[in-house]
Length: 320
Image 1 (cartoon, rainbow, N blue to C red):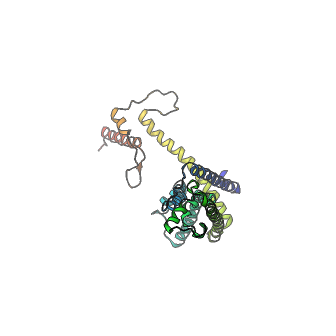
Image 2 (image 1 turned 60 degrees about the horizontal axis):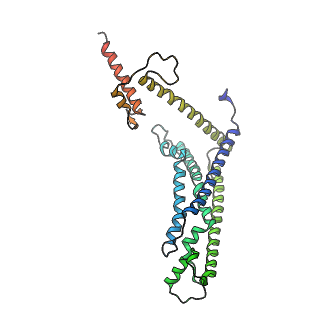
């Protein structure tokens, strides 16, 4: 019956709502992490030549790390990396063109999900302004520093670099410091809001372009999205059940029974050599062009099966 049910939008809506909720949670966690990170770790050095490096490092490096983590934690990334080429795929031009379009669509989707955390980090830090003030304080125009002070350029830059640290600024320069800090916070907050606006417009235009250049119609795309979602859920369930049944065969071969068995009449005592054979690190081992051993227990079970098969043939030779 399930195979003949017409596709509805409920599954697709549920999937989209999950994506929206996940992105909101990522953004909230990023904001909270940024606030804690700034409170406990950020302390501007207030020294010429170090402010810029320190401020940009705190502004950009966490965003880069979050971007990489966003790519790494998305299952679609690994699907795209490992599943885009296959010797069994048809190499005709129409299919290749359709495949390229779908790959671009999936790549844009992955990038959009991965950019949630780093863009949130950059926007929040720019609106906060502390990192930008630290990084750019020594590069403020000189007319914001008092009325033509009688100091050298290097001394003026040193004094400007100390502006983020109020305890280092002499009393007569407090007003100049306040003006510089306000100017830099203004620039930082404007940049933060511009970043948010650019991201929102880019996301909207990306969805519009994806819809315009999509090889599927609107309803066909909804059906495809619903199908992919349902297929993935069913595949995961089948994978779990299949791997459990397959592993059960190897566990039964090693111990003589499996967990949950009732009325166990006989158990198997593994030998020391067998224990050593399944102990250690389980690496994926290639058996032939089509098959792999997934674990040491898997390898042992296949060897035992092969050995029993050879023994059976030697005990019962074919009649000539």
